[in-house]
Amino acid sequence: MAGKIERTPELTVLYASLFVVMVGYGSTLIVLPYHVQRVDALARASPETVAFQVGLLTGIYALAQLLAGPFVGRIVDHFGHRSTLLAGLAGLAATQAAFGLTGSLPLLYGLRFLGGIAAAALIVAATAYVTDRTSEHDRTRGMAWFGTSVSLGLIAGPAMAGALSRPGINVGTGTFRIDGYSLPFLFSAVLTIIILGYARRALASADAPSQSSSLDRPEPCGANRGPRLRTLLGLVTASQYGLAIFEGTFVLYARNRLSLTPAQTSIAFVVCGAVMAVLQVPASGMLARIAGPLAQVAIGFALMGAGITALLTTTSYPIVLVMVAILAAGAALVIPNLSALVSLGSRSTTGVALGWKSSAGSLGQFLGPVVGGSLISRHQDLPFLMAGILLIAVSAGIAIAHRKSRLAADRGRHVPNGESRRREQWRLRMR
Image (cartoon, one colour):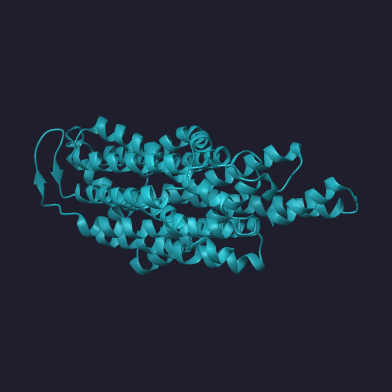
């Protein structure tokens, strides 16, 4: 089945939809620090104030996803994948286009918030569809292709932003205007509309409500299921926080300390996305034979922490790219395995479970830019240093907890009853 997952027309359009979400997100990371400079309210603001506003504008997108996640999950379960996904694509196109045209700071915040809601609808609907169309055995591989689509969008978004930005263009005055940094947003909106038309045709028969089979999931005992799921959601938040610290502050760090041009900064994001895209699917296949999901998650957190901390040790551009690649390699291990573990660790309906996962990830994506923007305004090294310490500590915590869990399971293995067997099966899946 794993070989057929990626080639079905319906899943192809789902992966394309995730791709365009990340094209818009990735291009925004590159353009936003320059885009806000045309806002009249920030015309004479200090660099620290601009950095803080950039962090808030990046974070409010994730805040919207955080608040909308559980609600959107219920919509997916009630109305189905297709309707929710199409609504998300339409909302994303509209908000991207309007964001590129406005010079009003309040409007920028409002549009960014609405765009986050639209992205949440699209992502939860697409993830629920992938979950419902894959078996437990293929789940991690399906999520790895999900992550590959996201990573390819992160490659294309910054590259597109760097190619389309034209600082010399300036048309119109007042609240609505077009300048050289409007073009990436408008192009992203057009691309999203194209995928919307494609999705309407390709998903014509895919509007059944999400009803993921509970036969395909483990049955941990009721006392342990909730805490375990909460722990996994906490790991999702931590991983997205670390990644968002990098994504939300690297442009400012690269400009202020490394003196990189927008094109060089775009290349760093391209490297990040390329490494994640290349590694996620092979990691879900080859590494799964020698290391279980939790072991891969622990290794991934350690690599993320090492990569983001090591950025502080060099100003050499090639070495910076190597450190970014190490960070991305860690994320490639963490993201698909956590997605699969969350889907396996909950017996609730697919949309609700994945809605909570979306909110957990969005919490990290919100906190990352906001905290990072605040820290970088005090000292440019603080965001990466604090994130690195957190990620390495999480890796150590996972390793210690996993070791204790295995020892406890080994001690209880002599109890030959059905409940013991179910716990052991769940433990093996978590490995």
